[in-house]
Picture 1 (cartoon, rainbow, N blue to C red):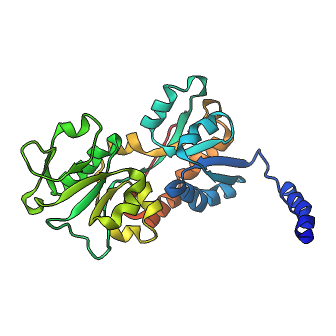
Picture 2: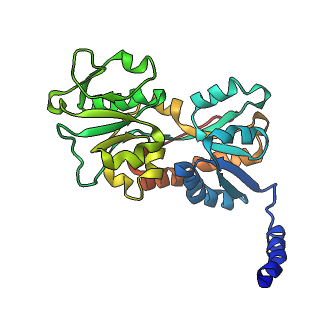
Picture 3: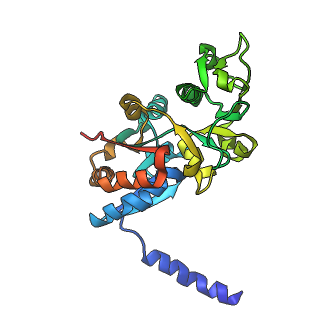
Amino acid sequence: MKKNLLLIPFALLGIASCGANPETTITVAASELPHAKILKDAVAPLLKEKGYSLKVTVLDWTQQNAAVARGEYDANYFQHQPYLDTYNSEAGDNKLQMACKVHFEKLCLYASKSDHKEVANGDRIEIVNDISNIERALLLLKDNGILTSISESCYADGVFTTFNTNAPNSQVTFADAYKDCALTCIQESNLSISLPDFNFGVIPGNTALTGLGSDYASRIVFGEKISEEVLSLRANGIAVKPSNANSDKTKALVDAFSSKSVETYIQSTFGESVVYHYESLLA
């Protein structure tokens, strides 16, 4: 015990002596996957070549905008423009702006077992239950022939439980080949852990990356067909305080994301679930 106590001052001294230079350190709060991984693996080496060190902190998405607004980080990386617009509508003097767009996370149909990748009649499929993703999930199934029609009432009240019949008042209609299939709505945070209880699950990209393990890519059956308009609107990007938008740090960070090596890294690491979509929004 005495030995440990004696080591503490030296450890603290070591930390203090290795303090980062605030002029050349870029601090970014980010969601864990794929955001922080992209930053650490693909962006940090590019910034190092320009004389900057990148410090990435994984932070819950509900805290990131407020943390950047308080000046605790130079930027964050977790959100798309519509979400930032919602935040800014209530932020008063603490508004942020998007500095660049980087990637889009696709909804994909994932198999509970990598060797069972063709939907069959009677299969049970879980889908996310929130208003922002339910339409995307149902359209994904319709575009791939599992469903033939979707009632507008699916999106009206925000209450989603189970879709399991082709009855006249059903909210969805299955194709004849899948008439005995069932759709069950699950909270997004439980989709990955619940997948073994189903044959398939429609799961957002970041949730699948975090929850399905290293073999998630091998479980993808099919993904969304995304227009350029949707890619641009909903691409996750870097947000900063307006006063920092034209700083050297922000410009270096935004420029690093434009590199072909970042695009290649995203494509090779995340497969179909994450699509590279870069736009600089700096003046």
